[in-house]
Structures are given as structure tokens and as C-alpha cells.
Image (cartoon, rainbow, N blue to C red; front, side, top):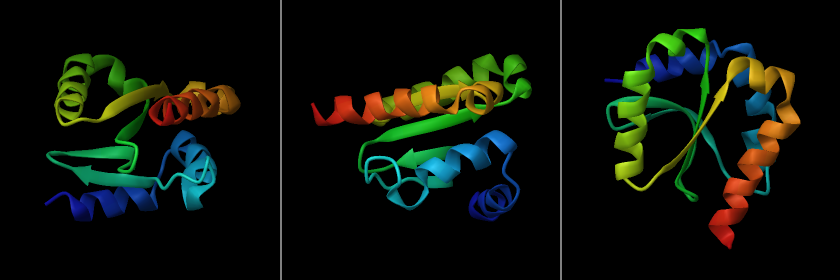
Length: 112
């Protein structure tokens, strides 16, 4: 069962996840509802908007050695109709506004 693990992850986010969540929570980005650390099939995704079928992953250094697993995870999600955006932790921390602009464009493309 992934839900207890997801709850633990919600309670201890990375700095990058916490920063991004401040902008995504409570429908703050274009009125879109996001959930964080959400079980989805066999995975827990960092952020998801079910209404827009958009998953956002914030990856730390450990993901550099897990590219094959991340690719399989992305493929699984895409096969089920989700779009996946991936950002590095330092990217979120260093250039939050650019990350938000990228997310906004993905949401806007969904409306177009």
C-alpha cells in the first residue's frame, strides 16, 4: 500500500518540493487543483493535476542514476494519458519563476 508512504513524503518534502508546492497549492496557479505526493498506479508522483492529466516530478541527484526507472515510470504515465514535466531540484530552487512559466504553458496548451 503506497498511501502511508505518500503521507510520510508529504510530511517531509524536499526544499524544492516545498517551494513549488507554495505556488501550486490551493489552486494558486491559474486556478488549477494539484495534489502532492499522490499514489498513481504503482508509483507516487510529486504533483498531479487530474483535471489536466499533468504530472510534475521534481528530481534530486539520486535520479541521475535512475534514468531507466524514471523513463519506465514516465512511459507508464504517458500510456495512461498523463503528460509529465520533470525538473531538477536545483532548477526549482534557482529559477522558480521559469519552472512555473513552463507549467503554466503546459496548462495553457491543454486549454488551447
